[in-house]
Length: 348
Image (cartoon, rainbow, N blue to C red; front, side):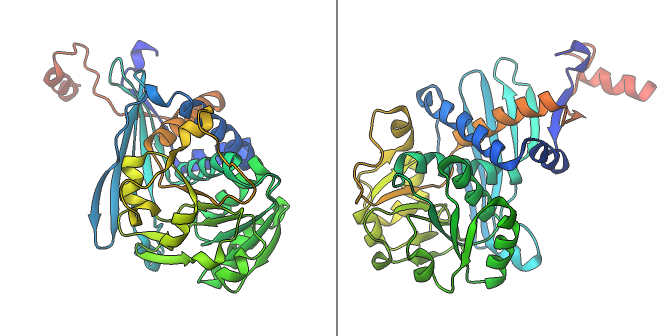
């Protein structure tokens, strides 16, 4: 970096993020991001790992998600407040930082509301590539809120899914989702119930928002060979699946110490066997073992995925010049004379 710009941090705003995605194309961005996540999961053991730090309230949760690979450090601030929707606000918002471990200086500050939706969808489809039935084309998408289109496009880009069966307790949400996706080559059916949506689907994605122990899927809805991508249950007291489904399924998770507290498996004994996604990706453990196996990706989101997203974005934003420069760090002429910088500013 130019020594005259030591106080400058690159910043990607929502506007710049949208311009970047439109320039790349959403499906290409999801594919490239999945490749980045896969590469980092293959070097899983190089990363610091800790469950996210959460502050819970009756209305939602605020979380910090940190990790480092020894060269770069990253964290994300993210909230989840389902009731925000009543006031016209996003239920999930986020921002993140990528920093240099050697100096401790931040390199990138960015919006992560859009980026989180992208990385969540990319991780879902990456897991499904190892777990879903071979040749699957039809996905039931239960919960048609802010994440739904990203999930659909990720499964199209990575697996070739081109038939969607939509259901939401709010029919208007399903109609909006269908309108948003109509030009992307899907065959779309809006279904009156979860049962109707699941019928004939090879993959079922649940991505609902309510912070409650809900039963979106019951055991009788889940036939042999289905892959379930459970995205909505991501904090204590928030689940979507009946526990009988979990007992029948082969369960894959990101980071067990976090998922056992926040994921669907919070409903099971703490010693219930699960498989870590990184082991499936790097090939030491098989993914789907048979045509009749029920597979479940119990996704809660993990910091390494955000690290991958920030690493990907830093490169793309730099290549395309889609960032701003923020005067974020104090940079006195003499690093030991911080107060003197204030006095010189007064004199100037």
